[in-house]
Image 1: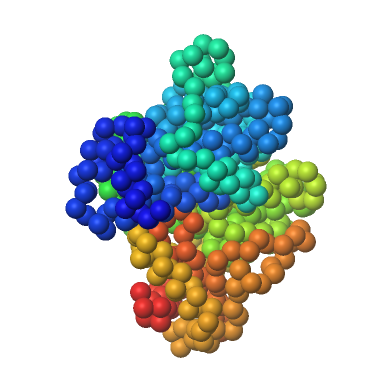
Image 2: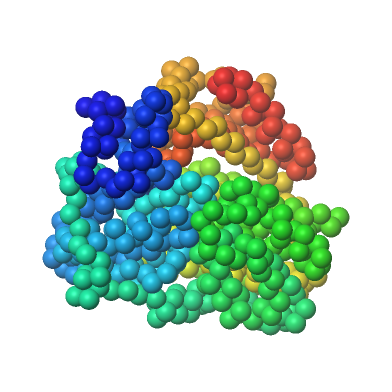
Length: 571
């Protein structure tokens, strides 16, 4: 059946509500728009589904949310009656339709005989990951599109360890989704399901356990106490789920002067104060930076809508406010965690730092200096979560910290996904720790550069929406494999790594899974670039890194290599 036939099927179906039909009637004369909405189903991958909200098979809406929930029910029920009794925890963020999609998920799972735990209000990703483990659930679902613009929403699925589903489980979900029509999914009445106990609403007790557990990850509580009366910091939740847990954890560990950006401390899916609720973008911190100038504040912390990512802004030696990259914040945290444990004599001999293949190599240099190892995994925190679970079973390594260049960090074994709550707590504590030594976070970063060299990284995304964009991305990767580049900015490419074809062994003697990623190392021995299509957005990404004696020199090399690569790829 072609896309136009599917479009007409939606218009004729009694299952489709009138509002959705009106939305579809409004595009009746726009063939390109109809094709984009109906040429395929919204892809369900290792990170679940993510797309713009609206009517159509390639949009996210109640119909494919129900279909995905049916897939999750099959995954759970395939694991036996006991798994169905353990149930599924459902969380959701502040985005448009998040509560609706969460309730639709609950209704489908309840109909399929699965116990459901539904959060009473918006909650963060780490609280869902933690809650799955705490309640002993068989799975979990989080309705979120992370840091995407307001037009988006998404559907993430977790396994019993609190980590995102592994590939074989994802295949089970996809196969089940394919086995049932998008309008044929049955669902229970929510009110009746709640009355019968099939759906249980959860909230305060689990929130409290989460906060207590996060607080155990403090490294130097005495540092906060020492500066609490005078130290000030600013926090913004970017209209998201971080507001309650982050403000509460900062209060509990002793911070007395946390200034909150009130304009951004609202649960508003329009994200009215920012172009995009992404803590990677300095634009979102505009209000906070003005507050910092007025209140003599050195550090600003911001979390994205589902509070799994954290961005920080720090004041430099000249008084300018600088947005740190995820790589820079990650390097600070790695050094701080390992330094703190070493100072206390509790740094394990088999300590392991985990990062992704597109994340700064500075982390490995820092880990090595403390006698720890560093492991690089594929992009996606699910892989870090899998290793954490593996370590807990085999006892071969002690997990210290995991992070991604995309502003995601996790310290502690309480979750298996990025945790903006524990990261915010530790960033604030780290700032207090250095304040007791008369240093700012910016100065602490300069100390790291002085010791290990200056590492500069850059990530550039090229958006390629729609069917044509998908084909263009595929063609770029095919072309790179057929005719690999030989040079970049006058330097020879001395090492070429195809993560789809080559076997990559990890420090624990396991293989890295295959992935559609290409890496090129250059002849100066310091510079590399990586090409990778995004797994959640219609983008192709180029990651670059280099190191030198100065930041400007390292970034100049990165920019020059980028310009040449863009030219070679026709971007």
